[in-house]
Image 1 (spheres, rainbow, N blue to C red):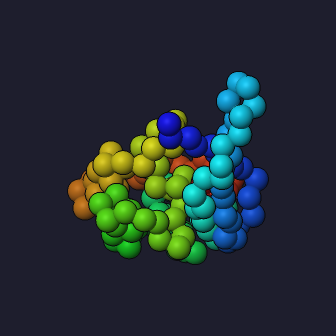
Image 2 (cartoon, rainbow, N blue to C red):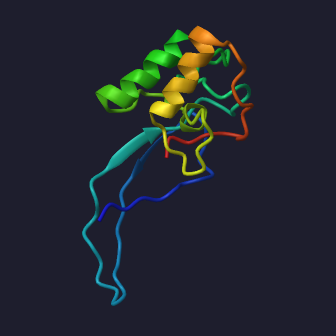
Length: 126
């Protein structure tokens, strides 16, 4: 089964490496999982959701759109990818999907209606 966890309290602009180990009800431990590494974003979330590429000016622009397109359709995460910023539709599970891309496209190319205010105090790459 796929396993996941949320890690909080990480430092900004730091690369972390993670592995998981699980146990069943009889404490039979699994082998270590494959390693995943993620870099936390450069600093606290300071503006509107949508600064997917972590630009220091917190500007939401075409670079954020292309970063999100690449993430969703080409796989892999860029060196700095703010998951909280990319969760533009505010999905409580933190899912980043086509709905987020649609909201960002609407903001950038159609309505220019402001995106939701940032609710986090910082973001880790999970």
